[in-house]
Figure 1 (spheres, rainbow, N blue to C red):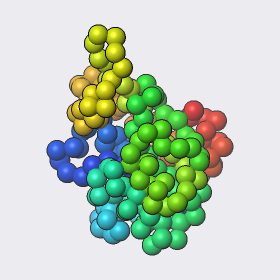
Figure 2 (cartoon, rainbow, N blue to C red):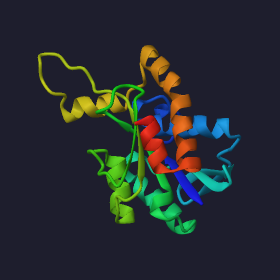
Figure 3 (cartoon, rainbow, N blue to C red):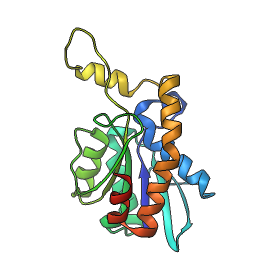
Figure 4 (cartoon, rainbow, N blue to C red):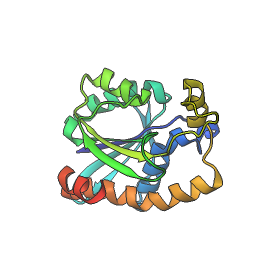
Length: 192
């Protein structure tokens, strides 16, 4: 059994935020495979189905981003998930908009939702599917402050950015399917 988690913040207010790209990607994947998020369990909205012969649990934690680990740790225990079968989809400021990177066992890169998961499950030995959202542009040749970053993450995609993310969704969906059907090495070789 595999657990695929998209990270984001619950509620309509956050639905189109850059920080919610994990929710956006997993929702697209679920629609492609006719999986509905029809249950609430372990502080998450979940849906299940079979893909490429494997039972799949899709989850959107409802704990808000910075406490994502509370839900993910409960799901891992509830469904007895091996960490090699845990895939976490999340935004990445250091990747250009719509670019994806797949890694196993990498750190959080400063992502507070991923930090929470690592802390709660006691390991970073799971698969990250990072989706680029780019960095905020600031003036006066200075680095973005933490306040700039938070504002950027919790702002909606611009219409142009939304087009870029929409174009990336099929690729992210294919990457998830490749992870399920062909494994980590094949997915990294094809999509990184």
